[in-house]
Image (tube, rainbow, N blue to C red):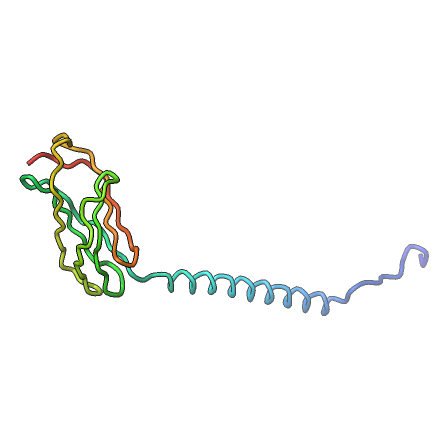
Length: 139
């Protein structure tokens, strides 16, 4: 019978459990550091932002309403319609968290059909952009 029993050599059960706990704790700390680094970098990137709320043709004008939806004051500088700069040096200041919608007006191009498909881009002095695309119905 003694020949069937062999000498068992290996890691004891206590050491094996301690190693598994150490590996689990290290993996959770690495995951926590990665998630917090990602979230910290993502939340600090939020800053100045504008959004085009609406646009419509009004007589011979194309009215575009822009709202400051970020943190910090922005100054609206330029308006582009279909890739063409319509207005520049607008200097419209929108304070932080302002919910007042400010209209921008561009002269309606007679070459555009009514209704017209337009791509609108508004750019602030610091380069903060907002874009919208759609069809402008005739007035």
